[in-house]
Image (cartoon, rainbow, N blue to C red; front, side, top):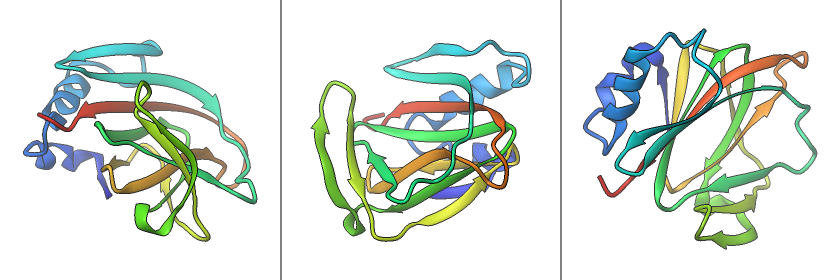
Length: 151
């Protein structure tokens, strides 16, 4: 997992397909781009959505992927984003090959606030879950890039 300032995203262009996210962000106004799914080519995409944050449940279910890296960027509002190493999780739901996702629980996890100044770059060995309230429920606008790891 990499958590860094959004201004540093291009530093990670050596990672397969991260440049596609950099190029997409440079080509749009993040505040006015329409919600929806955008094809970035080569099996990569971005989903832009808006939603209300929710309280963190007693048992958080975290996800992991095998075929894609995620870049998660909350561009307006703020949310708690939780993460943990996959080896510290317990399987919750088997791997779904069609959706490239499996779910885990973990006895503890780390938290970072995504708030428009930073991003999370998530690798296959990272469990993660987002959309949790920081202090008060609020509407957020979020970009989730799905970038193929096979380059």
